[in-house]
Image (cartoon, rainbow, N blue to C red):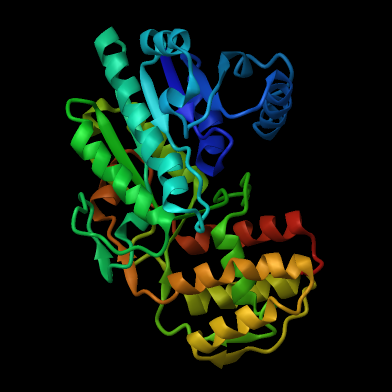
Length: 376
């Protein structure tokens, strides 16, 4: 039997992991879920089972146990009894829960990233002492490369110290905690790039920064005003491949100590010009009327966004709020090396997918979910 303790089951990666882990009939899951009370727990579990397309009485769903807790609290806010039970039952830990908000204070970012990392390591030590632990897989981000130019190597990064936001900084700090405090534990660290919907259907539980970037690139929200995209490239990866890669890693203790870059890599990342063409083509095919593009200096656009937020409706103001963070990412010339990772997963029958093979369904799913009408 394999008993997996999973954090982040309601997030983008975690929600894709659950049905994949449960394909193995010998696997059971303990899902850490943050809810106020049992009533909210029942509603959330009902919604998640529906997302996973489990019918009432499904044998897979019967192998799910929900643990009420909070990643930002010491010991996940669990009592000694729950912790003792987890320690003697858990064989595998997969930690992918974290807040991906880019405007948190550093204390908030640490609470959602560094604190749970330490708790996972402590749980791992308890499981190891109980003789049950086989593997720990921790999800980080390529964002730990921060504002560093060039291609990110597949190794520890103690030298990186400048970041776009507190989320990246806290994730980097969490990685340092892993290497400093995780000695002796069978840990693999995964650094995904910008995660998008499933490669075949585009399906995803949350529309995160990639989709905000696509709205921006369409020109609809900026009245066609657009910075010069130059030779910038965007590294994306579909969530089903990320989940498959983590599941495979979880089953292979010999992968302990590895750092995997779950990304397209410098050669596979799509140019922003090409992505913009694809976005505008998709938007127009769904009846969205787009303005002609007018290129301006990026700093001018940042100023225009700040002014525009003073005069637009509330819904549009919320949409524009996220653009400064997007523009900050567009100011760096970066890539994320994945040669060793690609070799490892190709050998496992999981070659890195080409962006052109999944971009159309990813954009199509988003537009179908949002409706053909403009989102402002």
